[in-house]
Image 1: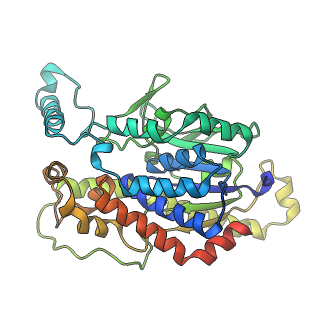
Image 2: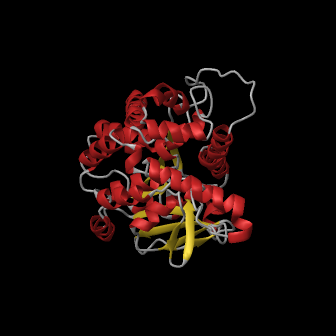
Image 3: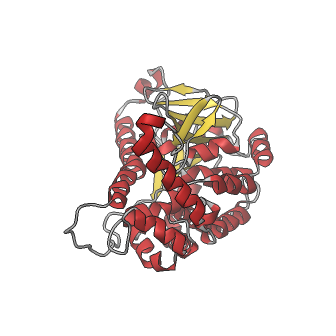
Length: 381
């Protein structure tokens, strides 16, 4: 078992359907390393990343099989397994929102809690995340620490619910805290509850939503749990990578375009900024004398970080897949103003359809295989 000072961490950020890219990358990592056991003893996830890390933690003793099955799960996904897509449910949800917005001042129904009914997601998580196995792997030390982050609606604080070794201490910062917990399916579902689209989840009397809302430093939970080497899998395409086709701009932005911009800000910017911050801190630490570092009341150590990113904009891939989506799903997206000419960013987060997620899994695998030497050297040093 690895020395606690050399713990390897895995950080998976949010991104809705883009989580499929992470699954493909993880499958490639298993192939590159040939590791039968989970090579990361610290796991941290938010949003879709929380489902992926919980899945890995529950199968820590069979990394290769776990990543293969996780990739297959994402590649075969359908929207109906994440949110209800039948016309009756979609019409009822629309009716509730119209009633609340138009008559709420008089009757105050409060029924319009989310644009989508994500009850199928709950069943998906319950089926594929084996909690007894997860708890056992933590107890045995196969997983030193696992954290899933959600946002407390009441306080606006990002709460990282973690389970792990006794050496991990809870933490408190201005906008984020770490709370020792025995993880449940509700923690994973709450972390994945995209605001407005998915309903909030109640945990211990408080309501929680997607963890990416307030997680400005995605690397922090892994570092707090002892990771000194972190592999992060982002869902934003690499700068200079293949971009989406240009779109003509002449009409007023649709609801889908507006929501897409907001979700981009929610999911994509934090990890990039945090990696830059970690790089600057590492450079600063290299300039300080050992006795200065040793005298500091808080241990200051460099953290090695490697980031894997899509080489192609996922929004471009979803555009290629749009025509294959079920009619009810296309109808819902069209109602938000998404089409083959607009709203691609929003679609790239909510299109839980195999025609799209399969492409992301394949892209994640191909991008990671292309960096096989770099990934292997990073994990072995």
